[in-house]
Image 1 (cartoon, rainbow, N blue to C red):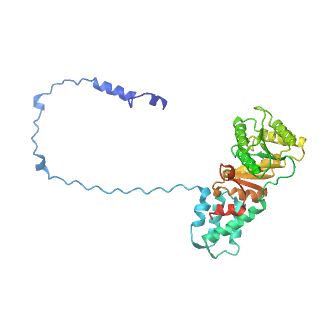
Image 2 (cartoon, helix red, strand yellow):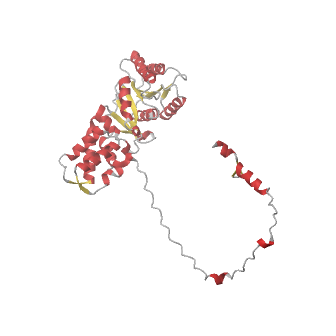
Length: 362
């Protein structure tokens, strides 16, 4: 392919140019033609004598190609399509199966989806039901599943109350810490930030910017230093200064990287040597769009550092967050807050009813 592109000259390939040059240089042979071989061409009659002029045919109307239907995002089916297909319909096995498939597509998982549709069928099976009735019934059951886990972080009287924030790459840990700092400062708490992600310079810079924005001191270490040593130093400084809340940022790590997960466990061990009660909270930040992969994240982080709660980010479109229901059903871990945008005020308390209604399109 590269050779063909390289040989194009003025829009023609080298072979075409060579052929044209050869054709131009050919001189036609002057072979004499005997007169007897030449026949006289008869004179043709005028064009109008041959045939009458023909009418120009009218242009045939072209059939326009039907517009292609846009590709639908399966994660948006519960909101846009599945629950609005009918005005009134009998709730039978087929309809329940369709609704269950839509819930699974929204990342609720098989168990939670079956539980929701079973609740819908109770007292309504084989009866006429409207689309709005379906939505309200399902939202009610989803909210019921979520209510036990909707709990804010409880700040203790300990000084400092230490919150260790963990998660995989790109889930929004540093931004979430900045938003938490803004929130707690607004409540009148003194807040300190610890930059324990020592391997990514951009993370330290980002946390420093949040520190300046929220007027919070940021404890840092040298580049590539031991994250556990930075955490230990931050705890010492926070204790000395009597800070109310210490928020610790950590490096993003994939849950299947044993070495990195062990590094996180080391931070916890070092902190406990200084104060057995810390961290008071270990919060896992989850990206709502990761779908079923969120299950393995929770399982492994829970095993390594005993996570105490979740913050779910990127819930700008709540139809993407069905995995929250599945996690609540499976693990029962508190969900403290949800992120619905980039601004500090876009970190919201987790409200089950509001979330459930958004999920089904109410």
